Length: 270
Ligand code: HPA
Image (cartoon, rainbow, N blue to C red; front, side, top):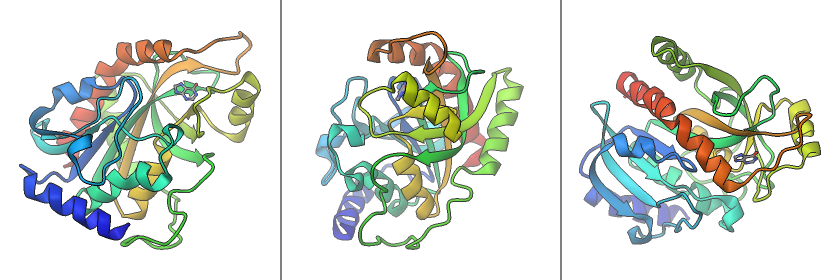
């Protein structure tokens, strides 16, 4: 795997128009931030050697190099999900590439179901910590350089970046929640009993992504910052059904606010 990582990184290094230290992973229906990026080069995943190809609706599947908030950035429009059938190594392959290309800070976004009863649909939740409830850890198997075999996970989400994001949100009058993101393998949404169980475990939101990427990034020493858009609420007294369309709709409504936080954070961070 390390050889593949090196080969793909070398291929991209030859084509990269700039030298970003910040990377962004855009989740389901969160393409608006991508539109704010002044694109210099977009490469479909299908053209990148060794890259898996994204399949799910709402995911464009392009690696973007450009400028955001006056800074060089690299962005993944569309990510790879475990439920699509990719291995954890495939899901996190792009993060390994980011490390090789010199990325120091990773911003991730996703759509998630709220399990915290005080949350509302359309809330933005800054991820303060996570619970890996996926069936596998992405570091399972031979250790890939440069990270330690047994990485500490005490501060997977940078407290410094959270504080900066809070200040930005306050300045722009954007309400943000804070909370723990729990990742399931999906693709089912949760039963009401599962939502209640996750809430008791300490989760504030549930989704099907992000945790593998953050584990690998953190192991590589990349600082991580994540925002969940709360697109639905589960496990409350009122029975609810969830559809992918509703999730996309709720994400679309609030994504300008998330994009503002991310853009301003890129300005002060990189
Ligand atoms: N559960 C899991 N993943 C999700 C949800 C949810 O409720 N909403 C959006 N992605």
